[in-house]
Image (cartoon, rainbow over all chains, first blue to last red; front, side, top):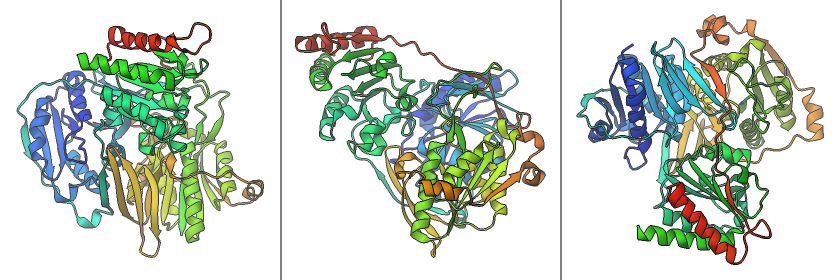
Amino acid sequence: MSSEIWVVADLKIDGSIRQVTFEALSEAKARLAAKFGGPVCGVLLGANVSSLAGELGKYGAEKVYVVENETLKDFNTEGYTIALSELIKKHQPAVVITGNTVFGQDYFPGVAARVGAGVTMDAIEVDATDDKKLQIKRFSHSSKAIPTKLFLDHYPMMTTVRPNSFKAVEDPKTPEVINEAVTIDPGDIKTKVIEIKAKESDRPELTEADRVGSGGRGLGSEENFKHVYELADILGAAVGATRAAVDAGYCPYDMQVGQTGKAVSPNLYIAIAISGSVQHFAGMGSSKVIVAINKDPEAPIFQKCDYGIVGDLFDVLPPFTARVKSLLSQS
Amino acid sequence: MKILVVVSQTQDTEAKIKVSSSGDSVDTGGMKWIMNPYDEFAVEEAIQTKEKHGGEVVIVSMGPARVVETIRQALAMGADSAIHIADDSFADIDSFAVGKVIASEIKKSGEFDIIFTGMKIIDEESGQVGVQIAEELGIPHVSLVSKVVEIDPAAKKAVCQKEIDGGHMVVEVQLPCLITCPDAMNEPRYASLPGIMKAKKKPLKEVPVADIGLEEIGLTADSLGKAGARVKTVEIKVPEIQRKLKIIKGQDEPMVKGAEVESAAEELVKLLREEAKVI
């Protein structure tokens, strides 16, 4: 085992690096580097990704391992699994981290099984013991419990981390770039991407957004969701929805926040006409500030939020939105 | 087609969560055990696949005797038979070993075309076992499939759509493969009364842990419990996030009305700017 701590870059559809990668680099540096006595390194898997090494350096990566391979142009499970497993076997890092994105969730457990590593998913805290064992905290039981998971005697120790859980802090380094050739036999690729399409939206992505405006069934229709979009756009927020609103057809599934759906932890979560079920809180309960607007004074959300107005959203939201708009246009 | 569904039993997380006296697990005393909700989508998808292409649906589940109730539920929904890997020592097993044990049993059960399983279990919420089973079996997987667009058993391929961060993706995968199911993909059916009656007579094979052949799959008896695991829970806490609970209400009735609306909106904006400093 080496003492290196690896952060595997998460790439967006357009090929740029996700914020969670920078957050993970910073947190690895702050919490793990001294304990393991090794450098924090970036890993880039893809096609035409070498040019991104400098960005990882900006957030403290001292080395960047790069696998350039045409097979990795779009994310595919087998390609990523082969490339990362081969790199791990060759260099034997102590810790390997990536974002708990749809892609991270897809291939990280498989890599762990292939290299015989322990793996945890969706960590909200990472730390290490004095004898170099990774220790993480995560949510379980519909986010009602937080177990601490300790890794035992198997290296590497692998985990995905929840976006928006750590602060990305610039710490510029000029990383040593190590190009690694990995042979990927086309016969090993059994999943083929036949279409990949970015959603056309100027809004930030839910899991990465600093602010989220979210609507429930009380909005009453797809048309009425415009009130949520309007507020969100003024705030530069992403837009989410409850399962009930999605089931009612007011918005697509990719907007669903909750146990089933996306987990978010923004600085500000504005819940509009959302009662606050256990399942919904499982996806947003770790938000820093929760605001509720609901006409039902008995709605559970009023027991679990920071600020709220008991009122009809159609009365309250327009003046609230107007005031936020005028405030933000001044500053 | 031979269609497998890996089903788990889980604690109903609707309940209040209490930490056990040892401090490293959740007190399950008095908790209700249910079929993992995501696995219901997996069972439904398997039955729909069978209805379309013919064949059989086999449930595979691991855990102590109580798991049989969940297996019967899947059979009542319309699955044909089941394999129960039974042992109480699985209580503290980690996902790495779960994947290996289930995969080894699947290998022994012969050829199959497709495996469905839930995207994660609602108690542990890790979502890694399905992927690890596929890896152990050496078959491809597609996780978080929002829609199975097409299955072509003759050409041995399936086309699946999945939602990804910032868009969606359509993937063609070779069979046999494993698919993990989120909740948007279908509407799980309820077990009918005749279905429940029939389920009692459907074949259920019990596989005791002694028959698994742990050494052959690279595990020791220890790795079924805490000692041989790669990751263990050392502490579990029920977080108490202190919320400010500053709720603006109307004068006469809880709801703000008339002129109160404007002042409530103003007050909320002020709190968010000056106290919470989030706008």
